[in-house]
Length: 203
Image (cartoon, rainbow, N blue to C red; front, side, top):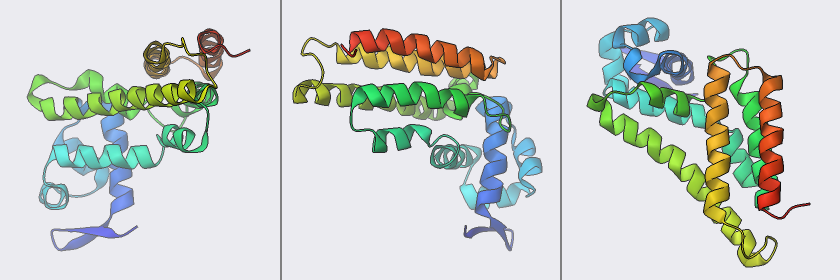
């Protein structure tokens, strides 16, 4: 990946974004100081600001990096699954593996960072909220498309199902961060799927 310039040097963008991502993931937005970021990234403060403009700008870049990498299971599922039941089943079970991966702080960066954002960083909080809400909106739209196509019952409450699935996925992120095992979360995913399958009229 191409580097970025700062203080007369050229840095490996992927390397420094990975370091920043993990720092924000571990400590949250407010809990991650510029000093922590520069130490973890191996650059100085002027270089950080030259490359990203601000701590906020770096955070947004780190979130995008996460969504295109370790958090990309969700986008892949939306891209590759044609029907909403298969999509939901995949999201529930792949979230378990993503959130309990042993080489990460646990859980989801987008979900976990949101619990540690002060009122002073409202733009960051709004951005994270919008990302989470967008996924539930997308899921609702996919369920509605299946209803319109006649592959799900006409009486299916698309919003309720999407909200339920979203609550389970977000809750699994928090539980993973608190140390819940993959085995425990697979049980949660399976139980949730049985409930959702009934709501969707799947047999």
